[in-house]
Amino acid sequence: MPASKPAPKRRSGCPLNASVEMLGDRWSLLILRDMMLRGFRSYKEFLESYEGIATNILADRLRRLEAYGIITTQPDPSDGRKLIYSLTTKGIDLAPVLTEMVLWAARHEETENQALVRQMQKDKQQFLAAIRDRWESTSSPHVVYKRRKSQNVSLRSAVRPKAVTPSN
Image 1 (spheres, rainbow, N blue to C red):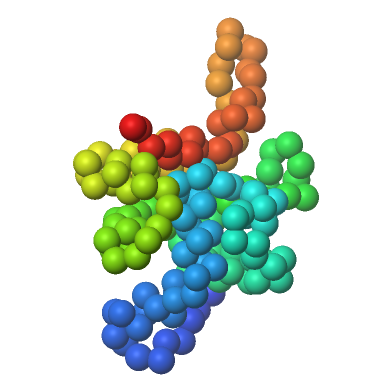
Image 2 (image 1 turned 120 degrees about the vertical axis):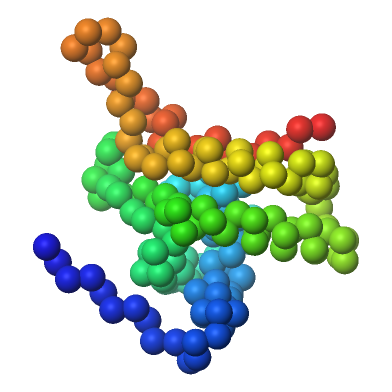
């Protein structure tokens, strides 16, 4: 069994410092947003996100998020050269933090996607439960469903959790 990597050295033991060191740049937060809200799971999907992240930055942030145990990777069952990214429990536990950041920005700045903001405001606990359920039910990126006796069918759509869609 391979030895686990040592935890990254921190500047201090302050909990806020630990959070900032793991998540303190916009790209890490936007990757997590795209995973939680849009259901992104592939490098290509992250690369095509609205903000236009550079390939070297994306690769670095994905490696860092994995090193901190916030996301995990598995080979794509349809192409072993590609990876499928998943949120870990630690990553899913960031949903309330990101939700509060969205609500804070919506209160103090002019922002878009007001339908999503209204959905969060209407029932925050239900919104967070939906994110948790979506990711916990897709912890394995390759799900095999039995169609009939001894006949398995792999559903590619099971690889991606549904994106959060605001209800009007």
